[in-house]
Length: 271
View 1 (cartoon, rainbow, N blue to C red):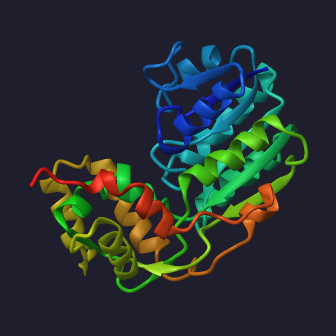
View 2: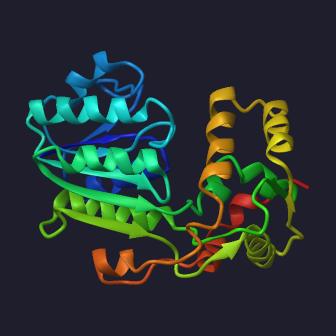
């Protein structure tokens, strides 16, 4: 059973693809550089990518909460069902109305579905847009003192693989978080402890963040998405943990302290 993993080179997608390959499952990595290529912005690539697939992981780029994502997820879901896909697993976000609308599209697809609704990724600090700020020792964000139960992407991948390959997950919504809430100041303290360096968090305005990101070459559409997430979802509504990992796989979620210790090498500088 071929499994299409959209966003197959992203944080969750590549981990899922690696796990599926290790299990000996036929995997098709859905990316613009894949064979065949898959591009969310080019619906003409979808048919070939879906050909012969019986399950699909839906990870929308850049985020399922951005304008236009809902229409694309709806169209992709229709294409997938028409192509014979029998199982859909959607990566979603907490506290995002547009993401929840996309969830409803997948729920109403007529095939087996699983929703994996996630908190902010721990890995944003080690391989995402916050990597360089951590290396520089200053995390400047428009996040105030809001707390978030950051989730380990490896946990997300484990749940998604189970949903794609095992029985018992159809019709389930798993809301995944870490085991505790942390402010960004708490995060800086954990990173400092893990690295032995002085890493600080500096709250700034949304305007200051956007200007700084632009100076560092972050694309405008990505800046708009990030500022939208900071202003619309990081407001305290998600400052609570869930038992989604235990519900899905019967084990606790990974803790940020363990993530920071295991990834300390990512923040080593040449100095």
